[in-house]
Length: 207
Ligand code: TYD
Image (cartoon, rainbow, N blue to C red; front, side):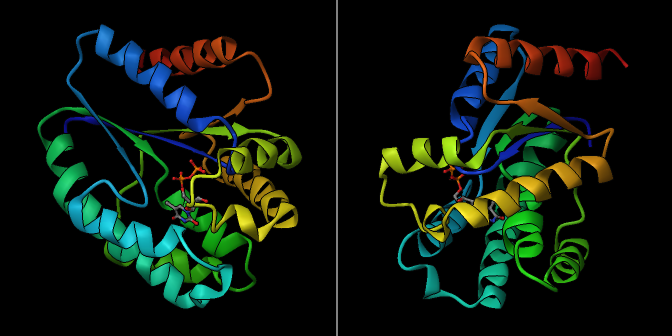
């Protein structure tokens, strides 16, 4: 595929949205053809599945059902949105992808990592070219996340211990995929964070 697939990851409230918007502006100003998309969601069907996942009680789904819903939405998103854009040579800027499932559905729950990896290999088999992991202390992040009160707080409602584990998982993931995953300290002035993100991106395209 000719395009570039760039994802943003991190625990809830890590400032991902702000940074994605900065990065999008930089790409748009460079005149590069791109799309911005998100998970869960990013296509009509996947957005419908999204509302099943992010709203309601934490106990709404068993871990297994939840994994299947995420992968159903991801498969639709990939078929309808991501793959066509990459084939057309575009940059795809995506808010979360399989790494979120590896952490939220896999790492935080015992025994589920291999289920996530197997489903990914079977049904998705696509990795980003570059992944920014926005790293922040969960207490600070949780404060920001819940303050938004969007009605899509099901994962924030799992609480601070869950987010602490998720943070640890993201850091371990960056060690597993050191070339693709760049850990960004997200507890800084947003303009400094976005400069670092752009530098990392420029390093990638120069190679
Ligand atoms: P998102 O809209 O990115 O929320 P936020 O902007 O607060 O980070 O994601 C919604 C929630 O879905 C988020 O709490 C993380 C969770 N999630 C998973 O648990 N697994 C996944 O595979 C994805 C893509 C998201």
